[in-house]
Each structure stands twice: as structure tokens, then as C-alpha cells.
Length: 597
Image (cartoon, rainbow, N blue to C red; front, side, top):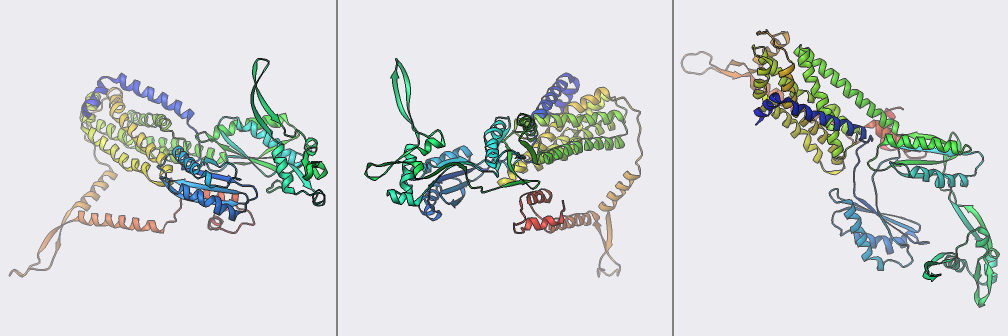
């Protein structure tokens, strides 16, 4: 089957040419659409359950809420870890499932479990919020907003109401988080003496405000022959209207809210702050949505930020941090390395074959194998990231292996005096099984990497499959295109028996020395002759022992190497970025002292 496969391509070259033309077009189109990210998109099934209860202490939430939630979700199939975080008035439980569990199924199971214990939870809690947590890493862009003529509250409102709304509508933007600034707050400061004189309490005033200052639906009714929605609009539209709200006292008396204290339009207490060039700013970070390209997100965000700066000249939006520059640098470096590796591979092939036609046929195997790989990556949902680009760069030299084996055997047959057509037919038939064995051996090494378990397996899935797919495309090129091009492009050569060069003679001599059979003297045997007796000894045993010695030493040397999941360059960059001067030194920060900025 393999022999006929190559021979069919030589006899009918048009289908093979058309096949790879279509594959290359699909690969180029896919390359232009592949997202560029720093790391592969991973899917860790994480579900959070957030329950709030106004005024509840963490100890109360632990016994009445968190414990019951943990017991309810602990029996769900696939739960790995359960972690609860308690603060004043809020309980958040994060459930981590095993990687093989579908995230949507995990969310539904958690919702069902919480629904079963809803009646056992306190009645005063707000409705539980159950949502999935997307692991998408750090923000890709950070900006700072500052204005000389606006207060911190006004600037925060501008970021929330204008900037965030503008950016969240852009393609690829996942969310926009604000850091620093304050939130608008209507503050009611009650006078204790006034409350005591009127015989009421702050709790009673709070209850009446919550019950009356609200808009409610009132059903439907027919007005003028048409059905209309009926609503009760009791919410205050301004601070003055809120101050005129009537508070009912004991004995049927009434008093206005503003007579019990002050009602003012203010802001909440600042719990975080941001500074840029020693000036207070309101900063915000942009996160990309899952599956989108960091480069495209940066382009659309930068364009919209420039538009906002022109639309609001009194407010300046200045970039603070740009993580996309690091991603783009890795992408450019990988592409440059890929081209350099391809050029060096072609140069080495020319130095050994010393035939520009054979070198050209071998070099064509590189783009014909690499470009269709991008199409397969798009079908599998991959992106151009550190891991997949590493696989493509690593496989550059491997892609020409099959073509080199094919063309070298074809040239050897041509030096026997055969025509290029006949040499291609016979050489391809002769070397077919060896080429397939070489390719499948590489696939058998790299493909299992894609099926590793844990989070590391999700990272290296794209690495193993990218290498395996590229190598399989190189096998297809070697069995279809390389023999066909050699049959029609190569020129006949004179019959010659070339002599081995210095390198080949040295290599053959080394092989003879390591495989020679030598006779070594042993102890004399008392057989009456009194002479030393010798026996043959194969030097290949010594070579084998030395090889296993190097293998043993290499395996044990790995224990001396430092270990880690993320390279020091990235971990140091992250440690410098997030560690504040008041933070205690960590192992990562101390290790980063060896890597200055």
C-alpha cells in the first residue's frame, strides 16, 4: 500500500499538488485568525457560592451558612477541594472539581445542592449567587484616569459609567475592573438625641426606609381597551425627596426623615487607592475574554481609549501596565526563530547534498508541513502561545527529516545511473517503511504528552498535539510531494562511486573500533601446555556499558536541577509587580534578587 501510494503520486501529480495547495490556503487563513495569547486557555472547573447577610458576623455565618453549604456540596461527584472565605456579612465558598468534570455540569450540580438546603438557611440572607469562575490569568492592560477639575467620586463615576461601558462592548474584552476611587453613597446620619426624644430607634427607621423606598410591580390592568402594566413608584428620585420621606412613630405620629438627622449625597469610605507619578488616580484593568487574542484586544482598546481622550479632554486616560507587549515579544521572537531555524536547516541540507535541486525539494517540505499545521490548530481550538509556538519551533528541524531520507535515497539511486523518474519510483518504494517508522516514532513520543493529567496536562496538550500533527503532515509531504518533485525536477547525474571524505572515514573507523572483536588474555589453563589461553571479546559490550553509564548519570543529574512550573523570568516579573514594600519577603521574591530588572 505504501509503495503504490508514492508511485501513484509520481504517475498522477495533479491531485497531490491540488491537495497541498488547498491545505496551505486553509493554513494561511487559519494563521491570520488564530488568537495570540501568553499561555494556553485552560479550563479548571471552579464554582463559587456567595451568600450575603447584612450585619452577620463571620462566626454566625460559619455555623449557619458556610457549614451547611460545605456539607451540601461535599457529596457531589467529582469534588476535589472546598474552600470557604468569611467576612462581615458575606460567605463565599469555592468548590474545585476534578479536571475531567464538565464545568456546566458542575454548576448545575451545585445549584441543585444549594436548592435542597435553601429552607435550612436563615431567612434574612440574600438569594445565593452561584457562578463559575473562569481562570483567565492577570489583566492584559491597565490604565489610570486623572483630572484636575474633578473630585475622586466624579472620576470614579466616569470610569464606571463611561469608560467601563465603552470598553466592555468591544470584541474580546471580558471585563473591566476598577481599582481605587470611591462609590456613590446616600448617607443618612441620624441624631441619637432626636431618636430618643421621639421614642424610635435606628433599626426601625432603617426598616421603614427599606419597606417604603422601593418600586414594585402591581400586575396588569386594562386602560382604554389596552392592557397596561401597573407599577408602584415609591422610590425617591432625589436626595431632597428622600429627606421628605415620612417615618411613622408610635401613637400614629409621623415625622420627616430629614428631621431625624442629615441626608446627604456623599461617597463611601475609600478602601483602596491608586497613585501614578505621586498623584491620586482611579485605575482600571482590562481582562480579555476566553479564547480571544490579546493583540486584537489591545488594538481595539487602545483605539477606544484614544477616542475617549478626544471626547473628554478634561480627563486623561494614561496607560500604566501593558502585559501584551511581553506576549507580542514572545510571538515575534518565536516567528523569527522559526524562520532562522528553517534557513539553517536548508543550509545544512545543501552542505551535505551539494545539489541545489535536491535542497530545494527538501526545503519545500518545511512550509508544506508547517502551514497546514495552523489549520489543524484552529480546528482543535488552539492559540499561538508560548507552548504551541515552542512546539512549532522545536519541530522545524524534524519536518525535513522524512524529506531528507527520501531525497538522499533518490540521489543515491541516480548515482547508480538511473533516470530521475526511475530512481524516484524505486527509492520511494525502498525507503517507504523506514520513513513511516521514523514519523510514527516521533508521534509516539510527543503525542502522549498531550494526555498528561492535572493543570500541567492542559498546558502541554497543545505542545504535544502540535508537534504530532506537524510531523504527520511532513510524512504526507515526504510520501507524496518529495518523490513526485524529484521525478520531474531532478536532472540525471553521471554514474560514480564517490569516495568517503574525512568525516565519513573517521565515523566508519569509530564504528569499527566500537564493534570490533578483540582477543584478551585470561588465566592459563593447566592442560599440560603451560601457555596463556585467550578468548574473543566484543567491544560493542563496552560501548553498551558506557552508553548506559551516561544514561544513568543523566537521570541522576536531573535531581540537581531546580524545579518549577513557571520560568524564573515570568515569576520574578509577577513578584515585582504585585509585591508591595510592606509585604514580607517570600521565597519567590528572594530568588528574584538574582534576576535584577
